[in-house]
Image 1 (tube, rainbow, N blue to C red):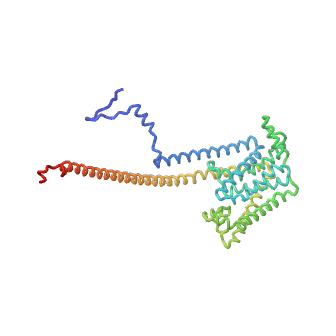
Image 2 (cartoon, rainbow, N blue to C red):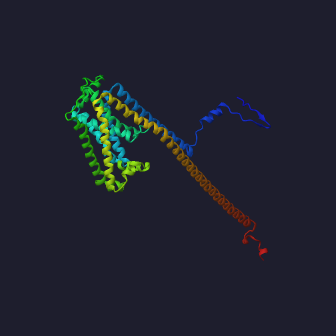
Image 3 (spheres, rainbow, N blue to C red):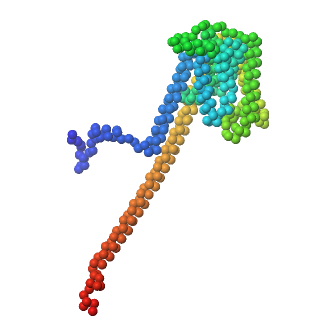
Length: 408
């Protein structure tokens, strides 16, 4: 096939054929270029973030579907979540020196909820106690601490679910779970039903029960549970392991909250930070106790009213989603902008380093070439001297070969 081109002056214009375009498409960029390396890293990070976001959306959609279509399954979902995420969090916190977060109040309440659902599902006193803790201070922390449900972050998703699922599980256990799905025996029976293809659990939902001395188990027992935990937390963090925490740089909830409060510099920070360390700890513990009392007071009407309990569960879901959307609109663009600046500086420094390496390599190659040229010149000079010496020896014969007359 002949190439066709337009001639301008004496030079023909270059013409690209289909084969040339195919060759151009098959060219692979140089993987050693810093920009290419950074682009590959950015694409890999974006892919991973997309996968995390999809997993977060799946968890959110699955939770809403379970709450609307099969509310009786919420206790099972909570138990599965606890069995999977508790060990994962323990390993993750151990690696990041966050292991003292595992003695926070929410972990104790999650464990108490799991123990009640598995071994004491029909104990009305423990139900009132655990329900007050799960839907009281633990659920109230979602609003008080403005916990955002960021779908692309596994840490945010697990944190929100740890504060959200215990109350949902206790609500479903009280109002929606049939008798054939309560306790470890009911769970084992339901697992056998699933093996035979039966999805719906057996039995009917028993009416909500109220313990004797209701106010004792709804108010006094949760506060006693909180006080015992607070004393245990103080003993572990501020007495037994205080020097170990400060020496090795471990994080605790008190340190984290103090840092956040100092950053915001609000009224609560100024109130807590006045005076000595003992006063700070007492004020901090007193404020947490007051927060627990307020949350339990908000929970009490929902314990006696099913419509109020349903509305409260909706509020618990709406607030984290709202905080998460606000986080996506404000924090994520800032992180992307800062990440872009960081990537620019990294690429710029990598390119400068690569240019310096190329210049150094060129200088070394030039020095090597000059050394080779000098060796060649020296070898040529030696060869020329030897050639001249040989020619001189041929032009002047030895003395023994000269005629005797000349010698005489």
